[in-house]
Length: 118
Image 1: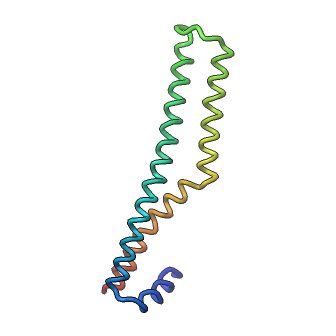
Image 2: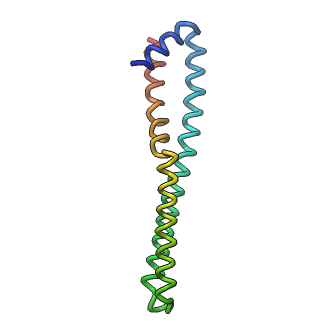
Image 3: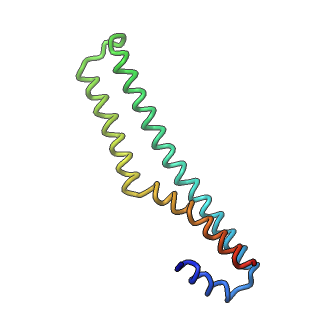
């Protein structure tokens, strides 16, 4: 494992307490970034759900609201376009992948610290 080799060199040059403290600080930074990405992803998905439910409500209540077919099609177009845009931007920035990679780094660092302690 390349990570272990790199960190073995790093470990030999510093006292263990300093290394553990630095790793704990880095883990805290990763946790904060993970929360940020999680909030962005959750907000995007919740907004998609809300817009879709709103469009379904308007289309379902068309007989009550007496909205023209043109307006209904426009509302559907807006919701589907916004959904596609939001998902495309999230995919472009690879938000899910970045969130998961941050989540996967935490146990690796913990394992390294535990190995060095013993």
